Image (cartoon, rainbow, N blue to C red):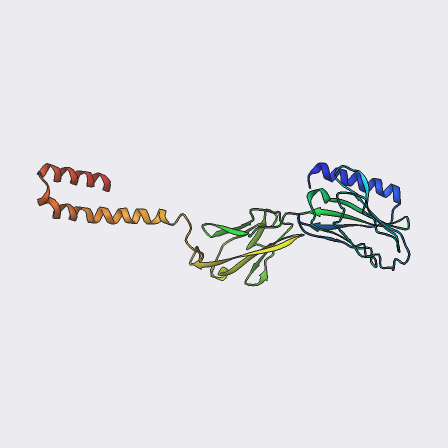
Length: 272
């Protein structure tokens, strides 16, 4: 939710508190676009012959009635935005909003027989994508960073071989726990590191297998893009060793000795 909408919601809550009086709690219900969240006031009492009214305050700060229920009378849904998209439980006064859109984010107010009984804020969150773990190794310090392409995590936890990791001299959690720094790594750090990321609408996990050889760290994951950079110098060295022998073998086939001499000189330059 952007800052402007948050301000409107805060003002709306203040206004409603003055209008209906204090003493009624405020609940937040998380949702994703396209879902059908349930707004349950949990009033814990039979409605009997009570009149039930649900109202809504959106980003435009207008208070509108979306449902008016009186026993033995036709239920009314006077607002076009919510018409035919509400499922009302006559026993509990719970309200399900079907296939929600961004416009449905806001404050929902329940009154029973003219008395305020509940205020519920419907707030949207973006689901988390599958996380990934990036690693760096400098001397004996290993850094594991977990990240997602979409969504924002409200909770990040790290585990090693099924046991939760906490801050200490050996392990340090930084950047809101998204990064784990392992100092003075040793063979005891071998194992499976798992990062669990969570927000109000979902939970995702990603694991990384770490192996330690002496004082160097290695990943048991598939080779990274940087691996070919190590292979190229090795291939070049092999070529420089083998090439002079190839030149000597092919010398009889060159048209002139000057061509052979020129090729030898080029190989010397390459080997410098």
